Picture 1 (spheres, one colour):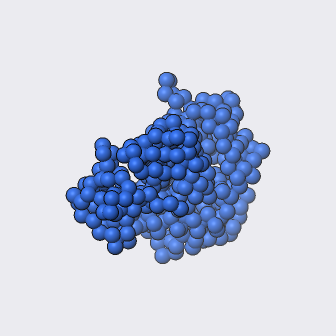
Picture 2 (tube, rainbow, N blue to C red):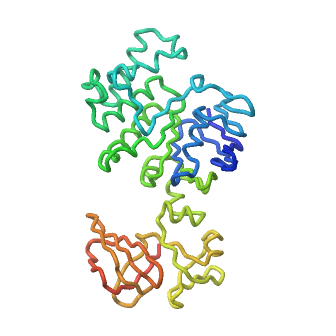
Picture 3 (spheres, rainbow, N blue to C red):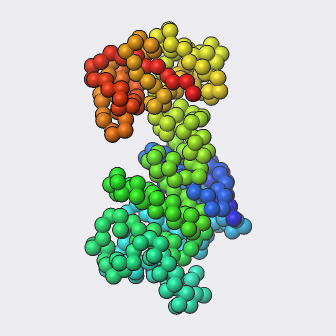
Length: 343
């Protein structure tokens, strides 16, 4: 069962939040919708969920019509669950009561009490909440609350699991732990997951495919490897790969940097980079030296990150980011040269 989104738009007065989006998501895929605030990613997710009736377009789940023209299937009739950014827990209900709640719907009326109990027990066990069943939300940490939200979403074993920036309220270390839990849940449930985020590292580490959105449109779609290593637009290159854009000129596939000396091979680069006369270089693909080999620059900022050091280098009127091995330790104010590693 695939999810087909065809020519979907959402227009508010003169503002277009989602602009003619078409995409097919395969059964069991983990899809990340990635983009900055205001790009339309949450609006698209809410259209799929049924909270918003799209201005135009069609949403199909297998042979089942979610949205088409004036027809709009209610949220509670769709075989899906949603995990919200805010956890959405009721203060008066225990952990177990939260997880039992979805099974009280009419869609689950065919289940016996024993079957429901078994499903709740399984959801609690899979999210590690066995010792917290009687606690109220006010007695839980942020990570525990998110696990309750996940358990509530998967207890009914929906075909489609929607997640709207579920980790944004958590601290950095807990985010990494929860990524693993979400991946484990995907493996266990085999549900189709659509995961909205503005965090590139979340999308790259978890998704089977990533949809990059900008200004209501799909900018690029592909596997994490394709998105990171082969960005097809300037926005995708800078937003996901964090590419530095070196100014210069092209002669066919030959690129000459603004210094008139440094040259790169532009074979295979999308035409948008050539039209803009820029060459994308990821921070880890620059190396620094003091042997006058490459583009000259001055280090203006330095951040130690354990396994690597992040430098900000001023080159002419531009600032480039460089990720360097800790063994090559330069100082703020040093004049250095940036060389692009060939791969």
